[in-house]
Amino acid sequence: MAEPKVKYDRQLRIWGEQGQAALEKSSICLLNCGPTGSETLKNLVLGGIGSITVVDGSKVEVGDLGNNFLVDESSVGQSKAKCVSSFLQELNDSVKAKFVEEYPEALIETNPSFFSQFTLVIATQLVESSMIKLDRICREANVILIFARSYGLTGFVRISLKEHTVIESKPEHFLDDLRLNNPWLELKSFADSIDLTVQDPVAHKHIPYVVILVKMADEWAKSHGGKLPSTREQKKEFKDLLKARMVSQDEDNYKEAIEASFKVFAPRGISLDLQRILNDSSSEVDSNSSYFWVLVAALKEFIANEGGGEAPLEGSIPDMTSSTEQYINLQNIYLAKAEADFLVMEQLVRSILKKIGRDSNSIPKATIRSFCKNARKLRVCRYRSIEDEFNSPNIPELQSIAVGIYILLRAVDRFAANYNSFPGQFDSATDEDMPRLKSAAISLLSDLGCNGAALAEDLINEMCRFGAAELHAVAALVGGIASQEVIKLITRQFVPMSGTYIFNGIDHKSQLLSL
Image 1 (cartoon, rainbow, N blue to C red):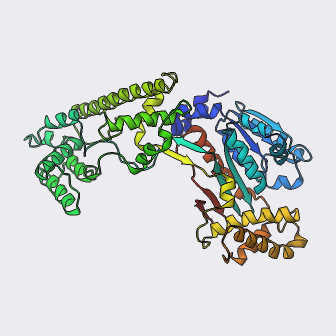
Image 2: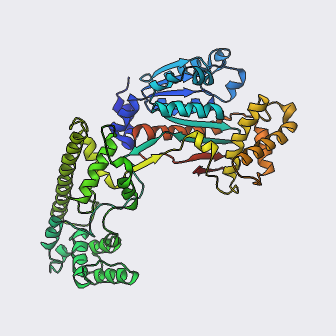
């Protein structure tokens, strides 16, 4: 068997050993193992999830061979859950695979406690009434729930849990933490020890841009009443001052300083996003608070006191033109400040834990360190219950096709509840089904208070033409998105989707609706 580190080498570079450990500890339940469920689980099994339980009461039919790679001709007539779980097991022998041959709807009705054993439940192809019941069960048991559905050329994915907190949100673009607009004492002293007017041209072109900007910002502030450049004219003037200090045209360090001058103009202190998290009522912690909110409570104290309005320093610096000696000195100054901030944060965390009657060492050093490093990038996601959304969605203007698809995906469930089949499922009834689906959609819109809203006629006809078919290409895409969200939720890295994701394969578009 391949060494785990070799086996999962490429993904370890994305979510690291901690993320992989979280995946390997998790247990996942899949409801319905048609193509959408099978594709979702296949991605997770290959990624090294801990254990899977496949729940499906149906038998493999000949039709399943055309849209599901995890069954073959020898599977026809056998339990679909059994066949899919044994095929999945073959993909990765370090994953524990189990199956339950029962219809998910029956389990939801008769054995709700079944779901509390899992880290996360992936519910595919469920109708509205079952979704609402399952959502209640999982929220009660604090189990993460993700819905995925493929319907003809359309599909949706929706996450549901009370709260999800992220320390390592890993945004693609984020301003590095250099504090050029608010340098601490040691950084200032280091900058003061370097002479920008040094005569040696080699020394002049190897002064790090961080030093140039700290010194020039200080110079500017002294002649502008302690304020940094803020207007367009002032920013241009500041850049011109930097240009004027260049001795020759090939001084890359000054070019870097001009390019990075916007870091001096950035407002001091913390972002509005972080301020919102600090102001959240959950930051008033008690003995039941999660470790995330205990860390936030400590951060609040740090910013108000030792931090002087700033979060703990991250401690890393980017590459820049510099002499080796000055770069290493600068690196050490940033590392020392980050370490000092971490030690203060650690003391605050320990004392808060003690205050709320918890073991003062219950949050490991590594977690506090990671929190300090990512303090400016924290994210909190909260999700409305499915029932709330279904009863009173924040429906935007019905111009967007994604909203039309959302309404029709719900209307087909109303249709099925009335007629015991989905629109267009039987060719003979397709013509009758179109007006029936239209009236189901209109009655849904009127229940939601959207009277008079128009749905495109051709979209209604398309939904009937789909006949509730699960197409493999759509299932693969929807399953891919669902499994990506599962990984974000379990590793607690990156930011999961905040709304209802609608895939529109008719126009090759997708949209996230905040309902």
